[in-house]
Each structure stands twice: as structure tokens, then as C-alpha cells.
Image (spheres, rainbow, N blue to C red):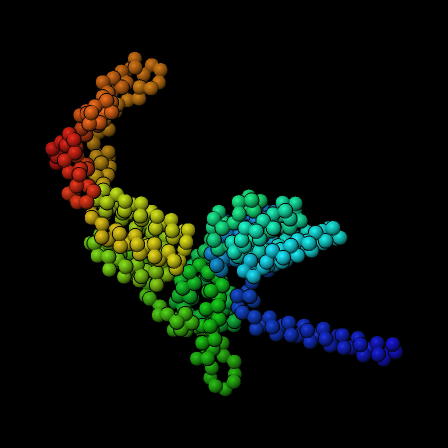
Length: 452
């Protein structure tokens, strides 16, 4: 090859490299906002401080390159894919990615074969990131086991489903589970402001608050919606001259980006709406209860806050008139954590309808309040001698337990005896109502007259 040909070849190679770099730069600039803002280091990650804070377990394992196979479990948009890449970059291992949606057993075996060759030829380990790991069937998961167990592969699985139900026990037992939480509104606020800076845009505070509230803890959704809102703002702000104008996102742009109307829901509305919600259920109006539930969910209220209020109401307002109500409310609260929105709205709705249509009694609530008042205001009498612990050596010589009547020794399983200190022996706290299940207690054995 002549010197001229060599020179021309070098020129072509350089030109190709320059064009490739320019293309890559242009593609990066056109990438979705969520991709452009993908964290480069653990310190860039927003949220998950329980895992990535100074003493976070995941941070310490990553920084010491001691992380073995792991399953990242959490809602969409909480950073599972990002964290897996950061783990790979912080380690000396090669990063390989598969999606359980379309990967086959053959694909898995191919990755294992390449990992074995890489380890044998170059001493380089392999991290396999398996997205949607819960979508792998048993045979696919079993195909991974030998490689994970021998250390040929370090598996990082990501799933939105509970791994205790969706991941085979052998694979799960060889992996460390890390639970990722939904991003809080403060986290989403930080993320949205980063997005505005990247987009060279500004926004009103109420627009930012609205976008954060509508994202439901999903960082990717927040940035995707922001990108649309910025585009809408840019179109409105254009002066028609072709001169670039810095977009300014207003609440109307945020509403249009989500195709939903923003509900006014500040601090006052938060307390007023939850008050209306509780009073509607207490007043046995299921339609009103469902309306206020829908209003809170549409405004981005924390479903766990709603669930907690239902659990309280189940005892405070329904109580012994329908004891099962507490179990139903508690089950709905667990469903919120286990399933999450939007599906958990169905569980909350069932609890609302049940509590609203159940017979009502506040007898347990009123009773504990009166008992607490007596504990504070009246002398604290001693435990009656026949009720004191007589199980230890020497207790009998002190008279402990003497005269105690064992209720099960009597045909009806009940015997009249005093169970309180003399100072409050005649006080009455529990006053059952003649409604629902509680009606059976309106005349309990040994019912004493109320002295109040």
C-alpha cells in the first residue's frame, strides 16, 4: 500500500470516528429525559437512602466489591436497572443484560457459556442483570442455579413482584434481597428540578408539586411527564421569530401532560377531605365514602395514610358491633403495601363499603377513654390479693392467689368475683349497644348498675 493510500485510509478512519462521535452525541441529546438523567454514581441516585446512605447495606457491599447475587425488589421507576448498572461499573465484572420477557433457556445457557469462557481466559467475572426476573418460569430459573451457585455468574434480578411468591426458593436463597421503596415527593421534587435544569426550563412550584404528586413514586414517570410538559410550555412560549425562548412550565402544562385536571389539595384540603371521608363512613354512607376515597386518590394522597385511618375507624366507630371490620381494614392496609396502586384502590374501596354499611358502636373507644381518665384521676389501688401471681415459690405464703375462683371450674364458664381494685370496683367503662354482634353483650353476666 502506498503512503498516499495509507494516508487516505487514516483520514477515512478519523472521519468515521468523528462522525460516529457526532452521531452518538446527537442521539444522546435526543434520548428520553429519564435516560439522559440516569445516575452515573451512587451519590447521584435520588431516594433509597436506607440502601445507599452512608451506612446503607447495598452501598457498603458495592463499594467493597463484595456484592454477591441479589434481587432488587420494588415498584416501577425506583431505580432497579440503574442500581444494577452502577453495581457493575463499581466492580471488576462484565455487565450482561437480559429481559425475562423474551429471553429463553437457550439465551441463559449462552450467557453462562460466555461467562465461563471469560472467567477461564481472562479471569473476568460476569454480572447478569435479569429484568422482570419473576417472568422466568421454573425451568428457566433452574438453568441459572448452577452458574450462580458456582460463582460463574453474579445474578442481579429486578422485579416488581414479591420474590417470596415469584422467585424459586433455591434461587432466592442464593441471593440477597433488597427492597426499593417508592420515591417520596421530596425525592421527586429533586428529580424534576434536575430535569428542568437539563431541559433549560423553569416551572412554577405548583406545577412541580402536581407532577411529583401524579408520579405515584415513579421517578421515570415523573421525568417522562415533565418532558411532555416542557414541550407544551415551549410551544406556548414561542414568539414565532425562531428565537429560542426558555420554556416555563405552568400548572396548566402539567395538567395537559397528564391529561388530567389538578385537584386543589393543599394542607387544609388534606385534613378537610380526610375528615369528610371518616364522617361519611361513620354516618353509614358508602357512596360518600367512595367519593372521598376517589377524591384523595386522584389528588395523590398517600394510600397508606388512608389505610391507617380505616384501621382506626374500624375500632373507633364500628368496634364490637362488627368485630370482623378490624380484620378487613387491616387486610386492606396490607394490600396497599403488598399490591400498591392502582390495583389497591379496589381493596380500599371494599374496606370503605364494608365499614360504611356495618353496624356502628364506639363503646370500646369510649370505654378506654373513660378508663384512661380514671387511671389519671383516681388513686391507683393495689391488685386484689386473689388476682396476684401465685406461680412462684413463696407466693402462697404471701397470700397471693388465695380465694381465686377459676371460671372454667363452673358449668357456665363464669363466676362472680371482683377483678378490680376497690377504688374503681363499681366504675363501668364498657357500655355495649344493641346493634349487630354487640347486642349479645347488652346484659352480660354480673352486669352492675352504672354509678355515674
